[in-house]
Amino acid sequence: MKIAVLPGDGIGTEIVSEAVKVLEALELPFEMESALVGGAAYEAHGHPLPESTLKLAMDADAVLFGAVGDWKYDKLDRPLRPEQAILGLRKNMGLFANFRPAICYEQLVGASSLKPELIAGLDILIIRELTGDIYFGQPRGRRTATDGHFPGAEEAFDTMRYSRPEIERIAHVAFQAARKRSKKVTSVDKANVLETFQFWKDVMTEVGQQYPDVELQHMYVDNAAMQLVKAPKAFDVVVTGNMFGDILSDEASMLTGSIGMLPSASLNSKGQGLYEPSHGSAPDIAGKGVANPLATILSAAMMLRFSLNQEAAAQRIEAAVQKVLAQGLRTPDIYSEGTTKVGTAQMGDAVVKALA
Image (tube, rainbow, N blue to C red; front, side, top):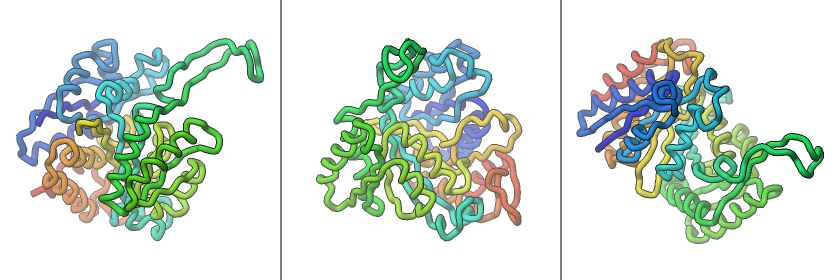
């Protein structure tokens, strides 16, 4: 079982080292190899995703990823910015399905900004299509406008597009996931104004007919954003495109109290996956030892489950995280009165201890 470990930038190095500590404590036959990615790779190699890093990721059974990005790279040409590393990995590895569970742990109900009765027992799975949509659509660029409101002015443009096979494969992933849960899929679109998402809705409906045991609901993205806050427990599996999924998954994360608690998995058709916390590199707190490593540790658990076929080990990690929360240990992002504030390394050590 080969794991490529790509810590990245900012707090990425701190949180990944804690996840690696937990994985090593399992004493399973892992082979782990680290490489630079993002801004750290740009500094060393002049590119955020060097060939050596990409090869390591492609050859591994799974990738454990930290986070990339820093404000100091914002002036670089777009292809050289740290965030291009994650886009490059998704594209080259064919990681088309992103799983983001939004689970509200009993011990953290008070950390959410919503009323406890709205989010107690929350368990949503957001499935985001990851390799299409306006993020990857061509053509894109800047030009002089020939029409529109201001002909002759400088303009920028992007292309939103989805093909039938792209929508079908993410639809099957969503319906199959729902079968193992509460048998309800909410497909989120903007079919009232976007042709791309009218097509999305049509194909979702067709695929849904192959799953008569699963309820399919269609919802416009603006309504979905409201309903996630108003009645989040009404959702089970939410499936949507790349851009809407990017936004809704972050919104859902805050229902749980902190994005620092949310893992994610991005999978290809072979079960090879990239596992990362849902949050970013947080350069403002990097190096202070206060970042929450639990999302990364829980991402490692998802890696064990989905790519390495180690379900028992995945459950051990998840149970250890629950145990640590029950002990009242909290990093600053989830701290509340009456609990014990700890740092990144202390939280990692506590999870290792709870594995025993």
